[in-house]
Length: 301
Ligand code: SF4
Ligand code: SF4
Ligand code: SF4
Image 1 (cartoon, rainbow, N blue to C red):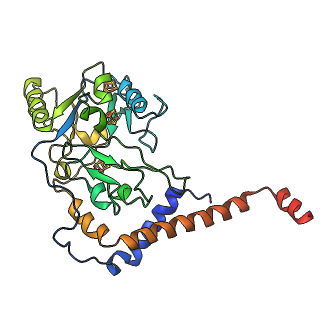
Image 2 (image 1 turned 90 degrees about the horizontal axis):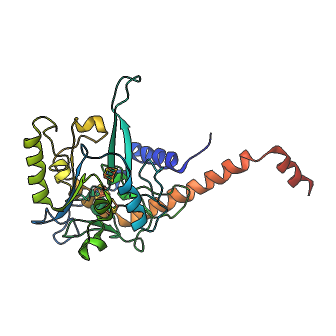
Image 3 (image 1 turned 60 degrees about the horizontal axis):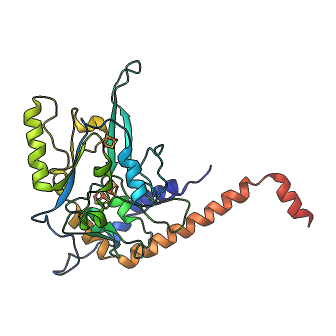
């Protein structure tokens, strides 16, 4: 059976859990002063995404890819290592004869207390006081802990590369520091995206729900989920229907910090061992898949 890198690592993760490796390396409690994620800042910026205004034109996706010097590909349909933001066209109808398409812009939620930051043992992901969660590829060792820690499935890697990099939304940190709007916000022709102070965005969102008189569900996604996110959503249907995970209000960041930061050597060793095993098995599969005449030719020399 063909082996994919994703399948391999998933299987290894399950095996590790089954063997109780986590229990064996049970970490001590965090010492005072251990690096952890900053608690909810007083003032932080964010983006309000009003899905009821979105027309699915994908101008935000194209602008995002361009601003990150990536090929602007409107056909990109899922978040991946080379696309920090995508617009998903989601059919929420149960009746195949009457599809109901809702466009949903997706990207990193730039969480207030991001679990990816606490999971990263080398500080490649950092939370900035202004709101963005930024990524430093020079520090990244490719261990993929951020991928398993993120409740939104945002960090993704190019699975075929042994050490590959992620490309996630950083809320256009460089642009906003220079006084510009995030590229997606600037590009949206439908004014579905609003950038600003997170508290003010919550006020705007609550006002829209109140004024809408039933147009919106009474839920601002990201207001409280896992300690809050700086990308906030409004919608006309329950968020589960739009594929958003139902999450608790507590941030898992501190739990991750306790586990990950007490075991950096184990983390790196595991990542390297898994990568090495993957390549060995992949090579075996490639050799087995070679046509028979290749083996015959080799045997003839
Ligand atoms: S959505 Fe995921 S990758 Fe983005 S900040 Fe939150 S935990 Fe990190
Ligand atoms: S804020 Fe910037 S990085 Fe994030 S989705 Fe918008 S354009 Fe892309
Ligand atoms: S640019 Fe605006 S309207 Fe177009 S897909 Fe993006 S969020 Fe929706």
